[in-house]
Length: 199
Image (tube, rainbow, N blue to C red; front, side, top):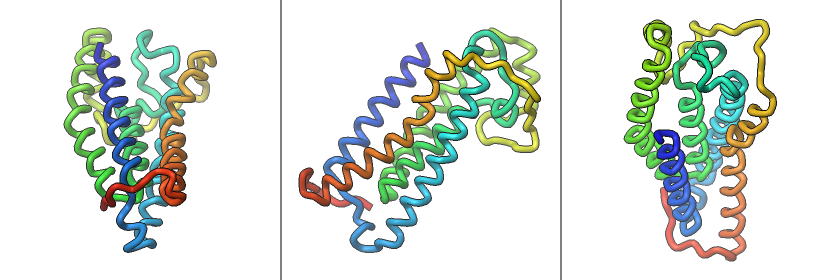
């Protein structure tokens, strides 16, 4: 139920952002081209980190999400690494729009919605794993990674069938940057009209 609501929220929010981008253009692009380019490069760097991070998470959690408490790899540095890397990726896409408005809206939406999702999921994990989760909770931060806690095994058994399904969702931020570039090109070719500029 929580996961369905989270996915639906993300879909609705992404659609609204896409509509906004379809009818607008970056004001920075014409007024301060260098700053606009810096926003884009910064966004791409965040998207790259997020995509690699989500793949790293998927490697550890694929096939184990409900079977056991995963506390190794990315899950050893924070309890919600998928959400952390998703946050970086969403901000990256926002900056790749070459605006400040879009990443600001993403930041506010994330801050308003996801803390409650994380709390609800942790209540479920506590019910499933009891004292094991409480010990994990006591030493590993909730959201922002603590690199000194990193713990990785020499070998880890991965379910390749489930991992393959996770690859697409791990890389959707890359596809979104591609969509942004396509929209920008369509604006420049006057195929899609620009109704207003945003900062």
